[in-house]
Amino acid sequence: MNIETVKTQLRSLRLSAAARELEQVLLQHRKAANLDWLSDLLARELDARKQNALKLRFKQAGFPESVTLETFDFGFNPAIDEHIIRELATLKFIDEHGIALLLGQPGVGKTHVALALGVAAAHRGYRVYFATHKKLIEQITCSRHEGTLDQFFKRLLSCELWVIDDWAAVSMNREIAEEVFDLIDRRKYSSGLVLTSNRAVEEWGEIFPNSVLANATIDRLFEQAHAVVFQGKSYRLKGRLTTRELDTTLRN
Image 1 (spheres, rainbow, N blue to C red):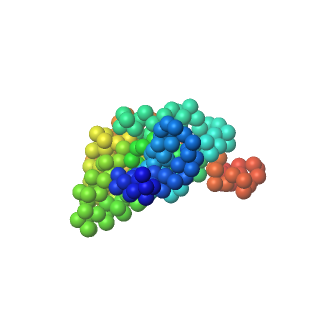
Image 2 (image 1 turned 90 degrees about the vertical axis):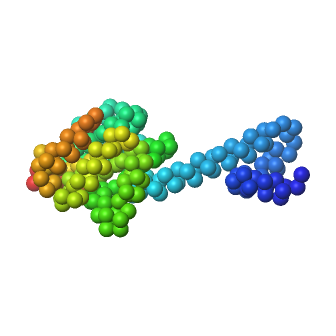
């Protein structure tokens, strides 16, 4: 059979990677009398599809970078509970629609861990949404103005994991706070959530226009939640200061 004919057939089946690799595979298996060559060809197609799907999930997630827990230095801050974080990394909480709250002072690695959990989830086939709290507010505001809020909510609720970084960094007016509450309330039926915050939980109410919305939203955030408090030295200062300089900086 003509190779070009086979290529055309593969492309018609949307097996573009197989069509591209066909001649190379035939060369490698020219002496084979079985179907190993076909298995090899299809394996390449499947691998290409998986890689393309992963790239798409990364793009749709909006990750600022790709990091892993393997690049996180737990030894730098021994007070951080590695066992709990490793348990979160199993991603069981996603299927349970649970919440991981990563709390503590700035610079101690909360964003790294949150992002690593999101990246790991994307690698395992989960659809992920990543944004800072400020970015989420901007997206809700823009969607309201453009009349596309329902579409935005639908896209967000189709994601199996949300990662919201720097929660409570900005205040919300009544309209936005109501939409955020609605999202978080509906999330429990569809998605897991990783949320980081530099602010004490007692201060979260300050970003809401009234105590009713504040209490209702915060209550939802602690349903089925695993809270991890990050303490210790700043990773952002690591390598820039001597130990004495670092201790002095943190005390001041």
